[in-house]
Image (cartoon, rainbow, N blue to C red; front, top):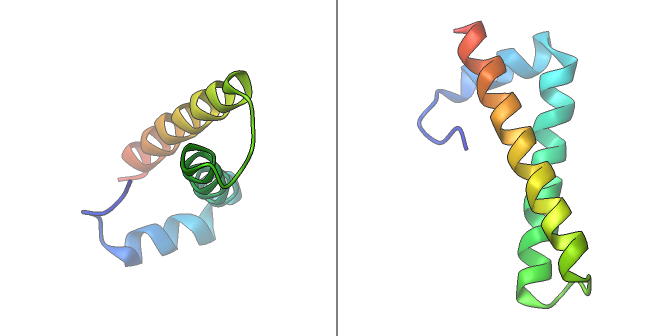
Length: 71
């Protein structure tokens, strides 16, 4: 998600903003769960998978907004 951004900026955001840090790790957790579900490793129904994808997208959008405001 922040591939093109300097790691030092992300580290500073995570130290300075606990909401950003929590949301960042929640997004990473959801990303892994969605991938596992799509690979068949995590057995969940389609409705739950859809909810997870929507939550992941909302987290990403919020993280990007927070990052843009800070820079």
